[in-house]
Length: 231
Image (tube, rainbow, N blue to C red; front, side, top):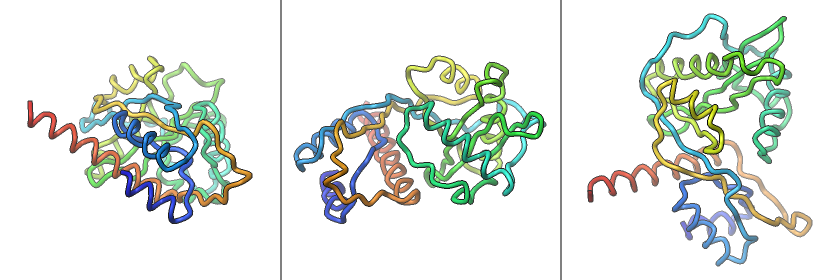
């Protein structure tokens, strides 16, 4: 881990936030401190969950998004990031090239609920950007979109994975109802103070971030397997 951090910092990157298991997170914070970087803290505490079973058929109300939806998808992504307290830059609507990976529900011709799939590891595809507009919450729309994306993933021969906020009992119940099981706990670690005025920042690309996340998941799974073997 120390070598990875040294390589990233030496390459001119700034590590804005990191998603990993709790043990790796503690080691990461210690390594960043030793490297003279700003103090990091656990901003979000989450559970990493996986599912490999079909629990319900895809609801006919859900449909894949299309190219004409990029502006509505972008608006939902911005609102999703705000609701979750994320600092991610959602870019521009034109940056959304994977619109076909979204499942959406419409009301009066407009998107009111969505969920997205993306590559996670060699065996899993990740479900993210689960969002329902305020006026349409409490009607089970998120359950429908998540289930639809999960079924798309299973049909592709992958397991479905996602992260859930440990402090949100509603989403925890929803995902368990859809067959997801907790694999391990993880958190998002962010710098407590970033002096951006003095730093030249090069952000990790989406692909680079996915590779870092996938590496963290593989390490966590390996650690769990070793623990089970020792037991």
